[in-house]
Length: 102
Image 1 (cartoon, rainbow, N blue to C red):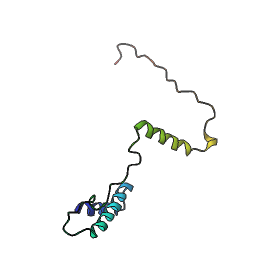
Image 2: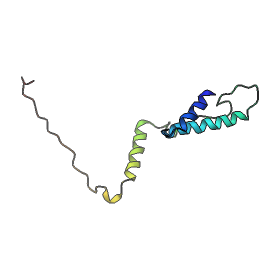
Image 3: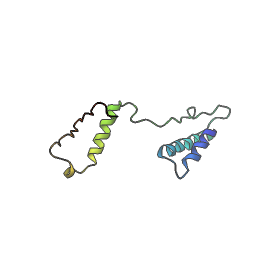
Image 4: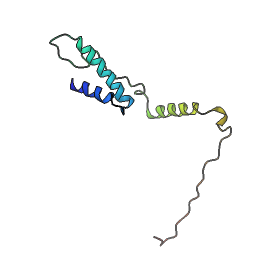
């Protein structure tokens, strides 16, 4: 029970991240559900129907997640600013270092 209250304390802090706030919301729901739980039964968040937040990208491989991120970023760029022809790749010539120099 203390863990739930601690996550609510963290969630209401001004510097709380979105994940911390989501955990606080889940903790509040768990506490509200616990108030309606049967007397004498042990309380755990999963015993009262509170499940951890879903991971929408949990089933994706790293390559799929990167492809999704690239597609999303490309969609944010206006079409008129996208290059119409492929640009030349960057070529950096290799310069050898003479032997005997530190």
